[in-house]
Image (cartoon, rainbow, N blue to C red; front, side):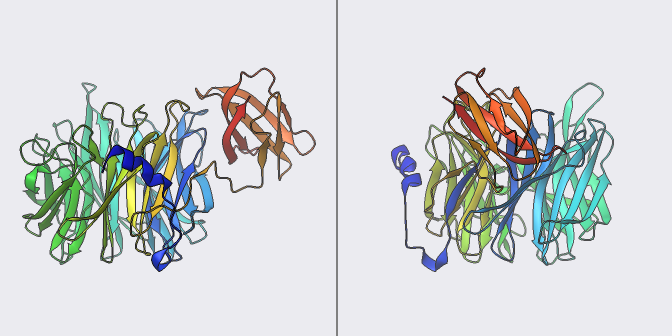
Length: 489
């Protein structure tokens, strides 16, 4: 597929939706830097997404929770943050028995004290339980992936950061088990002299007597391994991943005896800078192998959290094409979400790219109950943005087609900033007595901060230069109620 053909993908419009498959794409744009790490489908066909929002004005991060329906309509777009003195973020989300379980981390006193964060929500997104678990002093979670095991426990694999006495930065593997009721069961925080040792994923073995953790750089090399852990999360064996595949594995069971993985390739063993996809048996022996990339001159990278997903007979692989290894988050390059639907033997059914008009980075994919696939990640345009990424969500049908057009600056509150574009003043339509309106420039600097109400809702913008600005509407408790972009002509 040529680059020209790739750019045409976003212009496809199809009205014949087989099997009532819903498709859409959505861009959620705010003046803060946003990322979405994980996504799950609930029992009603809605999608729940978690990540973090970095507040530019206060320089801290909040847990981020989004809910959209099967048509892509925004149902909830909110932050969970106790105070403005501790940063936090969400890594994983699970839907089980009509409850929602979220795992994240919270910095109480950076960098010395951090906590593992457990939250239980009901179907209306109300917090019904919340726990904080100790992390060894001087360590903090930088990454985690988790499962609900056969004993109905949350089991996670991830890695923590720390700085040693020589001021050298280390990454250490970490494993933790929590009951669905929020009770700490067991943990294993590893520390080694080796600078970088990473754990990315975990699944149960076929007979549910142990766990398989998928790790990288355990033996002073870049290759990957499967670590066998007992039920207490102690390591009992280690086996090398075939073809040197490493990092971002996203393991799923194809059958009771075969596991599908996607990762980076190793020199002389597998394809560099491609989505390397393998299936292995219970003894970690190679069954099938294939790789996917945009072309020889561009680099592909697996999805940051979950790049392999299966629902019924539909199996999807996802990653980022034209990934910028030198500037992976705020690149000036154009890139794409890269999605492949495969057969169980890893032969492709179809392969498409989405984006190409800015820098896109894929974080997670989800094979959905209607046979399609949901992709979540970021879009960043360095010509109009400065260090603040937008959330990009794309839902395709089983043929890989998008049939909705992009919606920008979604709002779920009856409010408005107008006229937009405007000139020397702007009006604020409010639905409550008092709002605080803050205007930022493209560098994230606060330009105007003004209290408005239904009787006095005009803001003087004569002193502002023509261009694009971000606005944020908050209540008097500093809760964000609305945000978006405003242009002065």
